[in-house]
Length: 425
Image 1 (cartoon, rainbow, N blue to C red):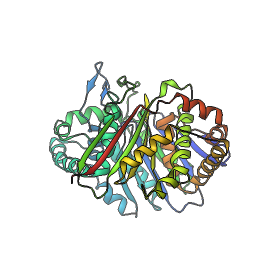
Image 2 (image 1 turned 45 degrees about the vertical axis):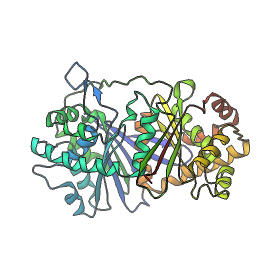
Image 3 (image 1 turned 120 degrees about the vertical axis):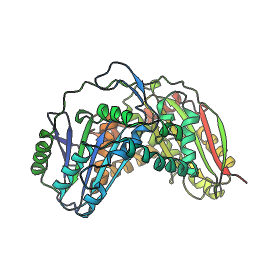
Image 4 (image 1 turned 90 degrees about the horizontal axis):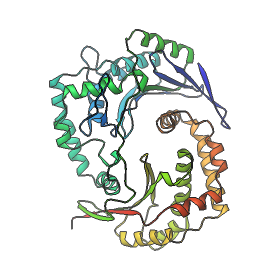
């Protein structure tokens, strides 16, 4: 196994790439009282136009199919239901689909090896039938309707839809009813065979375990399964305009308090900078301006415009960044005006930056006390950077006021989209 040594935190991640292409990341920690295991494929909602394995023509599959497939991988023919199997050893299991990946997981302190092998087996041997695919459509349709009734979900869906023209991040991860009804067993088979090959997947294990015992068990398990070598998957990435789709929209829905989002769209191409470093800079800039320790936060609360601090979300859509400043308030017009005023008069000094850097470094160090956070950090690094970033603290230390001012000058703060979810009354 190779070792990945993380600077400053005195932590080591062990790495093995198996003959079939599966990548395994191990983070053993003797002080941990639990284990957290994830099995991830690089298949998310944005991968809906691609060339299937052993084919030469691009196809377009229904929106929401990655999430639908996540549901159906749990269907078993001869094995116990996964939730039942894991529960017998006191473990909890789950799965989730994002824009760029689908992850299956379990957490529990007992029978780690047995649970890992079961996780590998049930994900790598799904059971699709026309009947169980059709029966899932009603379940996911209900899920869609529930999302349509939740103000927060509606807000986030419209943030992307009103900001992005062609970029696949604009679409719902779960899809809509029409998409779901068009999904077939054959389409699921195509997506599964293309994206669930071991060479497109990785396993992350964090907790208290013997790394040699676990990696040997995984290697033996994978040797028993036959996979042909697979070439890199060709995926279509549409070009994206720099403009927003809608500058402002007010959506009427049943909600006790209005929800609003001030969204700034920024082209990544205008920056000559590593994307990880750029993301950190965006969190720093907008954190200094709007987080719970900012002068903005104090002023907005003193004026009783807000009661809770703004939530700052940075969404990297590959072509663009969407910076969202989100809050719940019935005084949203006053809040939006205050945000605009702040963005037109940005002042960040060295002291602000150094304070934020200390917080980020502290968070980075203390995150290794939580094996679940470490696991999620590893997944994020692989999906975002395609490797484990070993010098995050160095990147944070190198942040400087000159680069911050250069970034601020390049941002068009008027390239914005405002989304409000207000009560029907």
